[in-house]
Length: 275
Image 1: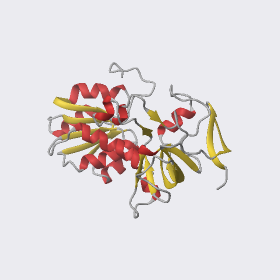
Image 2: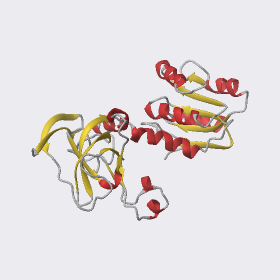
Image 3: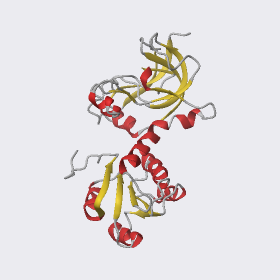
Image 4: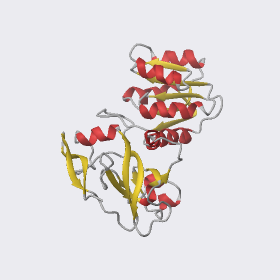
């Protein structure tokens, strides 16, 4: 096996180039993966622009990926060379309070790509083996590469506790919002509304299960919600993108005991619901 590989390296703010770098060697609890497919996340652009406070340079981005196990450390038992896999964007200890409650994303040590490990915009990537999962033989590597963002959409829907007959609003028809729309549709809501600013994305939302869409640029969102729901309002709102207007809308249209799920954060927006 050769010693070097090609990788997309971010050397500093807006300084990115294709370089030849050493192929990483997995430690006792790690796995080396030959990358077959990798998708682009908004976070990758945030790191390139220098807007993420955890970013350290140089680094290799790419946390949504799939591939084939090339090598494993001696303590790894659940995967082996040749296995087709995808992986989480982060790793976890498995023993802290959050991990023991099944909330691994809140792990006290919180290891994540590309902040602690280099990512998959390279020919090979090294990751903690605990974050690696085998995929079915009939799943394409391209589909497997979006398992991680799909999990974000699924988590938002699960936390919303959507009941059949609920009125649901997904704010922001980006990749996560559109994935969440598909999962929300499986809960049999009364109305599944997707709001955003781009008609082309709202049209995709309709194909994926949305009963109604609202273009907030040319429609009165509050009046439209009243019209769609017959004045009943929203039982579950999934914040997958947008700005202050979404937070304000939640105050006005979210029902008593309604659920407001935060999947995204405002970008450079002053919010009275600061998080």
